[in-house]
Length: 327
Image (cartoon, rainbow, N blue to C red; front, side, top):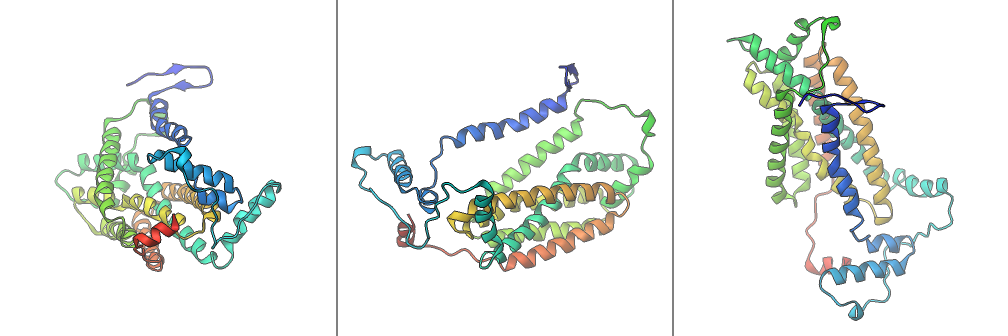
């Protein structure tokens, strides 16, 4: 579509419509969260045993139980000390939740997961943010290269010498088909891969290392490769870091005690956004002038991520008895 509607504060264009459509699932998810039952273990960790019992009772009823026949009246966790936060000032509460993450024994995991988060999000967000430009550069390179062969860097760099002068450019509010179809292909491809690898969810550490190794090889090979189609495949391989996100954040839940994992995950999101912002600005100003060095830097950064990921704990299979005791 190609429209522009003046609504006072802004012109409503197809790009804004696309943003709204992409944000709708987030709003629906926020509403859906209200239907979820809070963790009983979380209630116990902050000294609210009655609400923990209510949560357990609600889960019992969801599973087909009868309210009046629920046998549990009191719950406790022997291995965790109850942390009552009622009546504390906001800053004191934030301090109590945050400082333990940067002290032994949690400090090592905080640094480890934060570094992996910066690796994954700085590379992935920068590539995804600039994907329309790179797709357009690739298409231009394919059109202009003819029978010749060009690497991904040569395709990207070649566009800066053939751009129309800035003063004669016209800004349009419609979406180009190449951008739209590349986004659809990207979503379908990685959704399919995610469904396939979900069958190996028990091997989180191996999956994380594999999804860091593939972009590492793709980044290095993209500089050396001289085939246009292979360059596009390698670019897709470089974006496979986004498959690490779910695996990584499962470690934020697994490696921290209940009373700290919420704050740990929030700090992880903050690191992710800051890393993504830094990556986008770095790529935007550097890839056109030092493309090969950028991709080699990606490879080195990903290699460091693999080394750090190697020291993550391997998943431990739990017996039915252990799972029952946890519950």
